[in-house]
Amino acid sequence: MAIKETQGERIFNIFNSVFLIFLSIICLYPILYVLLASISDPIEIMKHKGLLFWPKGFSLGSYRLVFQNAMITTGYRNTLIYVTCGTAINMFMTITCAYSLSRKNVLLKNPIMFLIVFTMFFSGGLIPTYLLVRNLGMLDTRWAMLIPNAMSAYNMIIMRTSFSTIPDSLIESAHIEGAGDITILTKIVMPLSKAVISVILLFYSVSQWNSWFNAMIYLRERAYYPLQLVLREILIANDTRNMTEGLATALDKEPVGLTVKYSTIIVATVPVLVVYPFIQKYFTKGVMIGAIKG
Amino acid sequence: MSDIPTNTPQNRIVKNRRTPIGEILLKDLKKNKMVYLLLLPAVSYYFIFHYYPMYGAQIAFKNFTPGKGILDSPWVGFQHFAAFFNSYYLGRIVRNTITINLYDLIFGFPAPIILALLLYEVKNTAFRRTIQTTTYLPHFISTVVLCGIILDFTSREGLFNNLLGLFGIEPIMFMTEPSWFQPIYVGSGIWQEVGWGSIIYLAALMNAVQELFEAAKIDGANRFKQIIHVAIPCILPTIVIMLILRMGRMMSVGSDKILLLYNPAIYEKADVISTFVYRKGLVEFSYSYASAVGLFNSVINFILLVTCNRISRNITESSLW
Image 1 (cartoon, rainbow over the protein chains, first blue to last red):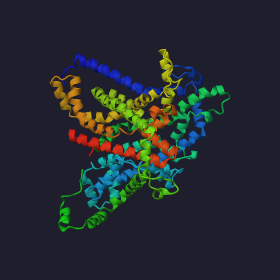
Image 2 (spheres, rainbow over the protein chains, first blue to last red):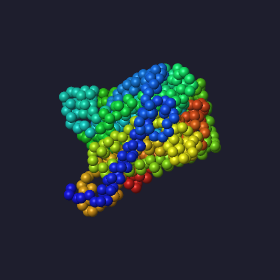
Image 3 (tube, each protein chain N blue to C red):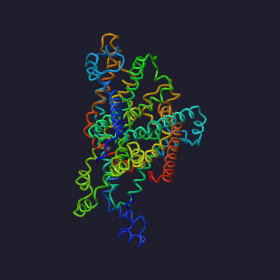
């Protein structure tokens, strides 16, 4: 377009850019601060006041304490189990359900869809759900972390919407050639829906990685604790004692306790942040599809 | 929406013959055997983990004891509801739930819309991508870590007080001073979700017809006028849908973040319906009483959502169903 930018527009553009950069810094800085503090020298960080732009001294001692801690490693292992098994269950349930509900000429499709969507707006509540899980004998078992959240209606709707954009002629011709539903799903529908499958996979695995509330209400046995529940003890209940036990003097314990907290945050957040950029380009697509019928 | 074939030839034949429903169903089950088999896991999951608890919610009208089970516990009618309505807590938790939602509606709801409009104005794709990437990031931080960071930054020796100290301001006890809780809760929520929330509006803007913007430009509309007269009308349907969903949640605040952040000193401003249900039910084991409070909340939420949807359908023609 040959229309020139006016003076006002140029000023607007500059302010807009400055504002957005400022916003980005606000979004990033807390994480950066925690990272810098975690690799700083404990005593110096204790004395330091104000923002950090560079580590104060340098020490990886707190990371050593974090990795030596038995609860952290147990929590990490449990979380990996919950994320892999839980996400596998989530994906299986969601894909099969979304495929069936995207097929044409299925009589009970709409009633079943209604049944599922209704649960997004009305629920029996926390206590009846807890009592059910208890009656099923799932308390203090790994199943409590996998089954009660086996799928999310919201993610299923996103996937169903995406599946139903696949041309019907494609599926019909496969049908005529004698392909069954399983073949159609795995050979046609799934390969054509890689983007939405990756987004939903990400949504599920992040929510499994981050979940702690179910673990808190369903698990007493510490051996089954996921990482987030261990984090809760360290970060929220402020209990760094078992990590700093080995230190010589009480004087060391407070500052080291502080950097141990920061290191724990980094150790627990890095895996998610590492996966994130690879799959980021699909976000818009996933959220958009969800918005159509959300 | 409905692709049940009401007008296909087979169906008309079925109608003419007046085949009993059972027979149609049986035929459909046979024809789509595999489809129904694939639906079985999801349907059983929803019946067991979502509909059975709705049935179990009847303990709100009973004096439930685990030993007797749901069916054999004696009915007490609305006793638990009455106890809740007459209790001191009703006012406190309903008030906090509503004020937190009001704050979030006023500040949290427009924030992603504004961000999307500003991002849309950035014409340099690489720069916009960078801003998007950084503003989405907080969404992926876990609630526990977020709350850990909040508690650390707001502590007496924390970052916020250090910064205030530079301006000679006395340390503020953010987490024991009730009046600070709601701003911190809502503010950290905006920090975490503003970027993520903007995706949907930005996508709607990107899908808008570019010619509209060009035409407005030729007609002499400046940037600001373009936003008001072209961009906002383009995303209005999305805004309305998001607003209906938001209004439907006016009586619910998730317990996750609050359970991690609050302490008895600030219950006065921090305790909400969901955290109260958790404490009554799973800490004090008053199952029936807590279920009654939870059920009361579920019903209110449901009514709110249905009402908002109806109002919206009448006024704007955008609705969820």
